[in-house]
Length: 291
Ligand code: SIN
Ligand code: MN
Image 1 (cartoon, helix red, strand yellow):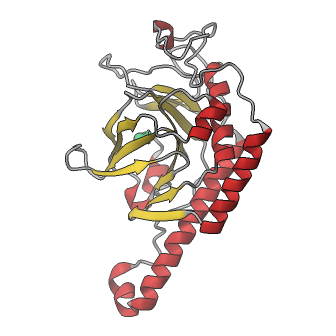
Image 2 (cartoon, rainbow, N blue to C red; image 1 turned 90 degrees about the vertical axis):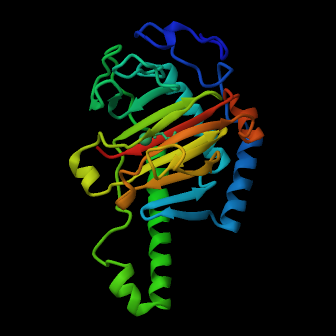
Image 3 (cartoon, rainbow, N blue to C red; image 1 turned 90 degrees about the horizontal axis):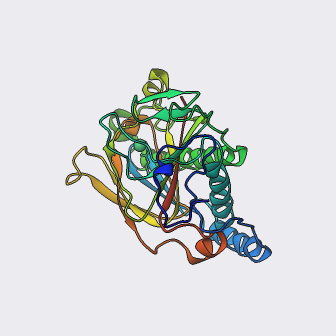
């Protein structure tokens, strides 16, 4: 098994007999009873305060600390197991030979950064991507429902305040600002503390999915990251910090928004999360999409 600080060329060219990148530093991660109770406490705290929701731009919603600690641990544990198995983590590259500064695995369907296409088998080792765990899909649905309810609530309150203007100028009742989505693809990225991802658009899903504005739903776990969005140039892009447990959704008018990942903020992962999972320093990100 690869140790956490032991990068090897085997990470970049896995074959079915090779072990993939381990996002955690220990062989077996068990959810112990002390965490079960802490997770429940955090969940209660969350429902007491209510999740913090921010609309960053039209169709782009940030749900702060939406995933409770217990579920964060479960997601890391499942990603670790999937990442070590067939179709697990590897360091992908582009057509020009440059490597992406992260480890990746795909669930549901494979996305090939060289061809920019989706497929059912990945060419580097002929592995079939593992399925998306059903618990992940439930959390995605919960996040979409929460975002849609927030948008509905806020647009209703604007209409109450400015009834004439909202009808004429601000809202189009036939347009769905953030449509529903059933994920059949999940791209899982692990960024070490030096990881980054340049500004890009997610535009390799089907024409139908993109033209309907079906959202991309992104889970952040572990160390925080500077997330860039809104422009293809880094200097002009807006910045928001994504912390462990945050969910970011971009669909509707923001479906093709430029976005990327700047610095990973070393040592910012919740201590309890690291204690329970032994997650390698860095950030785990899952983006769900519907093909
Ligand atoms: C991506 O754009 O595919 C990943 C974004 C992130 O890591 O937050
Ligand atoms: Mn993307």
